[in-house]
Amino acid sequence: MTLRVLGIETSCDETSAAVVEDGRKILSNVISSQAALHAKYGGVFPEMASRMHIEAIHPVITQALSEAKVTLDDIQAIAVTRGPGLAGSLLVGVNVAKGLALGRGLPLVGVSHLEGHLYSLWLVEDVSEVQFPVLGLIVSGGHTELVLMTGHLHYIRLGGTIDDAAGEAFDKVGRMLGLPYPGGPHVEKVARDGNPLAYNFPRAKTDRPYDFSFSGLKTSVLYELKRQAPNLRPGEEPPPGGLPIPDLAASFQAAAVGALAEKTVAAARAHKATTIFIAGGVSANKALRAEMEKQAGDLPVRFPPLILCTDNAAMIAAAGHWRYLAGQRDSLDMDIKPNWKLT
Ligand code: KG4
Ligand code: ZN
Image (cartoon, rainbow, N blue to C red; front, side, top):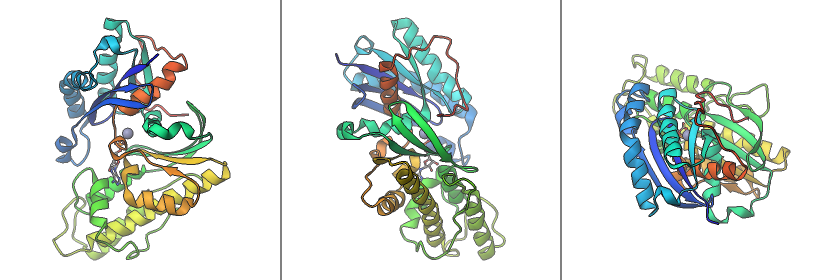
């Protein structure tokens, strides 16, 4: 029997709803991003994010059902992001999901946003061939997590960031370089015209082999910027032509993706993973993709299609599909978990 899951995602600044069939086939994936509204604050403004989710959520769900050419009668379960994320934002999605579950008598399945990112890689048609264990790296705006996936829904945490998340480092450096929010894609864009070898920024040493640290790298970029432009204030746009922004961006990016690739590949080899899965917003980065593939050699590396790298509800529906099959049914008093850990 066909199993169709309606996914709902509102953990940060994207309001999204999707219909996924059999955990693999995306019938619709509607994403309404608030990023342009938050850009003028240089980051996500939580109160505004929850208000915007309230405005967007019903039209987004209606559109997801209509694009999928289904009604709620054709849906077997509702999967919703329960955490981690912004409390006010998570509440909107979870409450709407509960309302639909109650109103239609449908099962409710709470999903971890981080697990969702990993399941963005199972939305690819030929992925059933992948054997466990799989080494997963989640690199997003709020998280950098290295996990060994030993089976569906089973994870062993190998490491993660001890300070800034990878995406957060891109966003902070983007801000320092006077680039718009979110910094990640803008840093990547200006870095294309820069020399990654122009500056030798440090790759942090950590006590545990599979942990990451990006705050020292970020501070080194700041010191270099201050050395070259002593009067520049943080976030202020550097004078045009005055600073080698592309070289700074490219050198920062090379150090960041180098560290990510090195530890991910080492962990994959040490744990005899058959494949490496990279997920989350930063997995859209082409320099990261190239460096991972270079260092992994003959070990296969998979990335989600670009639209599934950043936040979306299709990945939540995909993870919800497996949780539903495993028998998970959450009650209507399910709470949100803003600081939920994957393991
Ligand atoms: O997964 P995501 O949409 O949201 C969170 O769960 O955090 O990730 C957003 C993060 C932001 O930090 C953004 O700057 C970063 O992903 N990002 C990128 C790129 N595209 C998005 N970072 C580097 N290069 C990119 N092309
Ligand atoms: Zn995310």
